Image 1: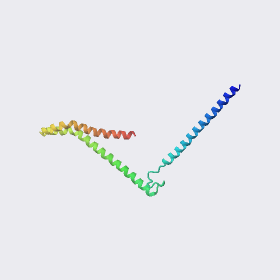
Image 2: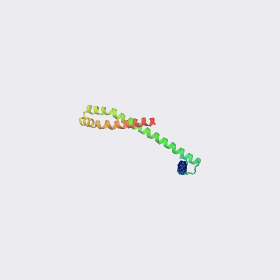
Image 3: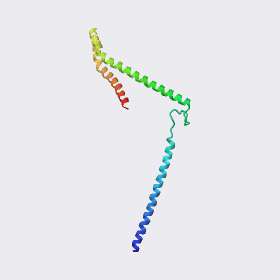
Image 4: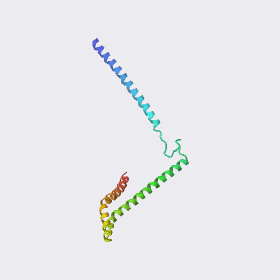
Length: 145
């Protein structure tokens, strides 16, 4: 019986020491995780975009400056869209009127002009189709966002 008692005592001691090691490992992991979280919190402190001096408060002057910047940004984006739209319609109009230029050159008796226009038609159509496709593709993509 003493042999069995010794085995039980040994297994209890092994379990106790194993429990201590696991406990120490878990505590050190939690401590390290806690310090990592603390460091992460201090780094991630962000300010409002209108807070230009970084004091954590948005003054009236900062707010007005921020709103003016946003207004200008919207006006610029609107002007860019208008310019792209006009360019695309102009390119599309040229694409549709190009064959008429060839016919007019033939009717006017300008054989070399009609030959040149006919030769460059393939390149012109591909280039203009690329412009139009890029515009309509970007519009569809931005609406899908």
